[in-house]
Image 1 (cartoon, helix red, strand yellow):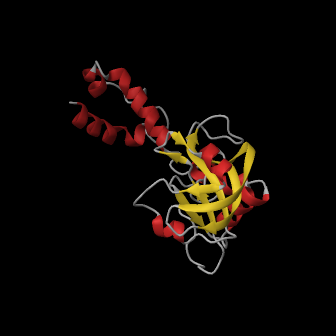
Image 2 (image 1 turned 30 degrees about the vertical axis):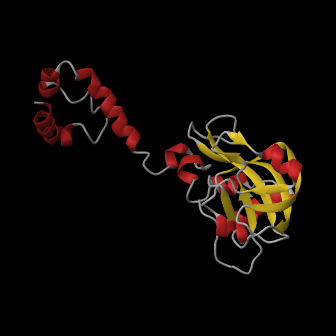
Length: 223
């Protein structure tokens, strides 16, 4: 998901990575030296130069998880962003690489769900409920309104509190059941072509009224 980018007069909050190449963890160095450093020589330079003293900054790590969540994921992967440290930028060295930061390590790590970003630098502006919630979670130690997020339009089909049989595309389970039933004929196509439809389509309206047309279609693709 992308952060709000308009409202340029608002003070930005920054969510940044601390792992060079995905494996070289710089968090201990950043905390001990009181800095955050862009690990690229040719990326994000202008973005880093736009950071201002007084801006909030957080070190984050983004990943996905299916289990061990504080809500029912129905076996689907959920986007997670761990907040490992928070701070305030005290000086920008204007080299596109480094800013000085007054850091506080977050222990234990706090996890934020759904509205996340995997890039090295994420500029987040206030003014929308998702960004306001994230900023308050990270820097004011407020809880995430997980119910609101999982029932928001983008996520509610997979993670919402609506009963599973009320979800869109629930009808696909019917066709999955038909496909499973048809597997019993995979080595006996003659029986499928000539046999009774009832074992495959046992429930109305697939009996009687539609049996003739379904038999014609079945013979066409099974032969």
